[in-house]
Image (cartoon, rainbow, N blue to C red; front, side, top):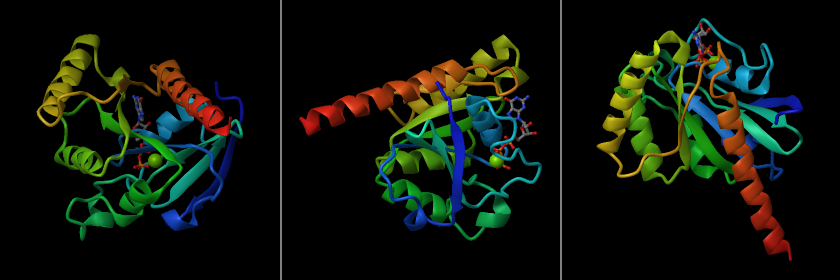
Length: 206
Ligand code: GTP
Ligand code: MG
């Protein structure tokens, strides 16, 4: 359950991020994938994260304090040509630095638009996460834009394509920010991980 949400601040690089040890869950995906809408939906706030019409606007690490117990981090979108055309893979240093270095990071949710086939940039990003040992889960966004059959068929196609890279699928969720679909599932998943972390911390303290 999310009872309390507070915007902490936006940071331009990993080494400027908060130094406390709250566990972090990051959200990332291609520009326009519906990340800000999803964060607003999960936190039940209308405009906590700005829903933008200009893709690629956010190039900062945006921190939100949830229930005074964990951080939700809104990462810049990747794959937006104008901000990253000099970068081979299309995702920039602010993102790779954060994911590789951030000790507090528990898991990154990688958002994928369920309406399209897996895009090259998504595939590259997921491969990069795998190679770098970044724990992640997938969120298929904008489920309300498809009917049930189309949704099932698209998700299956994406999953099949992912299984050409990995033997096992990472955890995945289907969401709609319009209809609040998937909200309970994503939040329970986060809660479960936080519980496990607390339990393992209690053990080490004894
Ligand atoms: P950038 O920050 O610009 O990279 O985009 P973003 O990933 O934060 O996407 P944002 O939440 O701003 O949404 C982009 C567009 O998709 C907006 O017009 C949203 O209203 C729309 N959108 C996002 N999520 C959903 C959804 O679940 N259903 C529908 N129908 N539209 C959505
Ligand atoms: Mg956004």
